[in-house]
Length: 418
Image 1 (cartoon, one colour):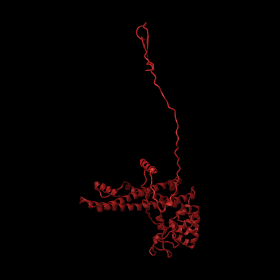
Image 2 (cartoon, one colour; image 1 turned 60 degrees about the vertical axis):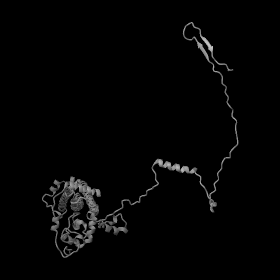
Image 3 (cartoon, rainbow, N blue to C red; image 1 turned 180 degrees about the vertical axis):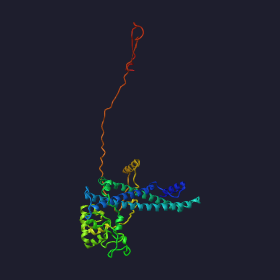
Image 4 (spheres, rainbow, N blue to C red; image 1 turned 90 degrees about the vertical axis):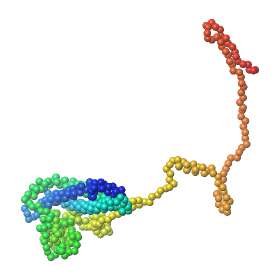
């Protein structure tokens, strides 16, 4: 940490800049902008699907014939709405990550200025003054790198969600949807909320209700009444101006009044229709109504129901070495050292010990040793003798020279009696 802080300070001092930038941080606006563009495209598709289904499922309007089944349109709408929810979550995380990066960069710049002011006019600075600041610089730099890595992960998740829209894009292309919506008005979610806003005596108003924004809203912001009466059509509700006491959003005031007549029946019908499309259980936030199919036991039902709607931030810190180190000082890896110890142990066998008589000598262990007694025996072996005889020596003369010369043989062997 200390070395990293010193290197950062030296790098900034050479460039004569106060702010430090990471190359990865250059893609921060690009990452957030790409998620926003993807969200805008997804929302435009959702608005087109909603307008088309609203026209096809309206019993009071004579709509033109459509060769495309309504079931595929509803499945495409559900898929796009799920994609929209995921992108909103990713965009919220990206915005939070960007805010953290801006805060870390501001703090990093202030620490750099503090170090420059401290070390500029002095030739020697106490380590107790600058070393803590260097450590803080290292922590801030690590935090910036972590946030940049998190943004990279969010960007990869956004790219991994694109294949889930590829299949329906082949079925419902942009020209095909525009042809079906020719002459129809495509309303955004904000326009629908503005048109359906109203007041009544039985609503919970934001001005008179404490913690209005924290009230739980059922069906993830979609109108349950329209979902039942329009055969699974998802229309956004209006929680900005009023909230029904049954904790459910409605697309209009009339829908809320109709729902108030028999709320339990509508809740059961929503659950029945959600069984036909299991993806709606998570999209409309209906896990509590389907707790019977939960893998948990009945004893833990209430416990896990509370966990489904509870979010918290937690952290865990562990030791670097949770297990105590065990160092054996007598361990030897050198082969010659092991041989030396083996020779010392073998040498003990030839040593003699001395004993002393004490009162407890009767407790000594008795040892018995058997030896072979010496034998007095001898054996006679034969003795080899030898004699020296003269070596025979004969001299031959006349072997070389003339052809007719005679060979002379002279016996030079010494006599045995000599």
